[in-house]
Amino acid sequence: MFLYLPKHFDENEWFIIIVLLLSIFLVRLPKRMPTEVSYLIVLLSLAIPNIIDHSIAAISPYDVYRINDSEKYELFDILLSGVYIPFGYLCVYFYEWFRPKKMKIVFYILSWSLFAICFEFVIVRLHVFTYHGWKLVYSFPTYLLVISLFLSYYEFLLFHHKKKVESEIHYRNT
Image 1 (cartoon, rainbow, N blue to C red):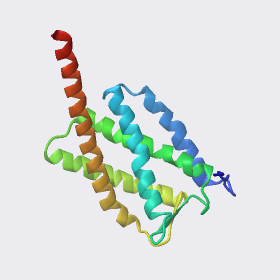
Image 2: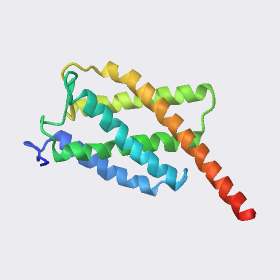
Image 3: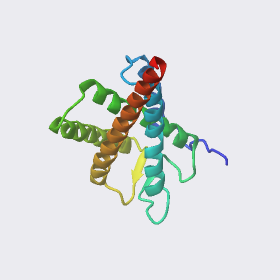
Image 4: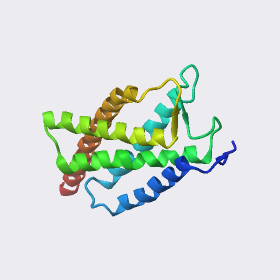
C-alpha cells in the first residue's frame, strides 16, 4: 500500500499538524487515571473515529463525505487519526476531574457532544471533511451515542482496574 502526499498543502493539512502539535501538551497534564486505562482510552480514541469515518465516508453505498482532499488514502488521512486522541482523552480526563453524578452526566455528555459539533463545524470549514450527503446535524446523535458508550467503557475499565488492584493487595497480604 502506498500513501499519497496531498496534491495541495492547504488549510486541512495545517489544521491537522497544529492539532497534533497541541496534543503533545496532553502528556503534561496531571495524572487523573491509571496508566493502563489511559492507554486503552487513547487506543479507543483512535479506533472508534476510524471505524466510523471509514465506514460511512469511504465505503459504498454510504460514501457521504470525503476525508481530506483526495479519494486516495493519503498520509494526512493517517495523521488525522491522531487528531481524535485529544478529544477522547480530554473527554475522559475532565469526566474524571468533575465526576458528574446523575443528571450532571447527561449535561456532561450533551456538552461534549455540542463541543464535538463545533469542532466538526470547524473541520468542515477547513475542508478536512467535505460533505456530499451528510449533514452536520446527523453527527449530533452519533456523538451522543459514542460519548455515552465511551464513558461507559471508561467506567468498565476503572471497575476492573480497581478489582485487579484489590486482588493484588489481597494476594500480597495472604
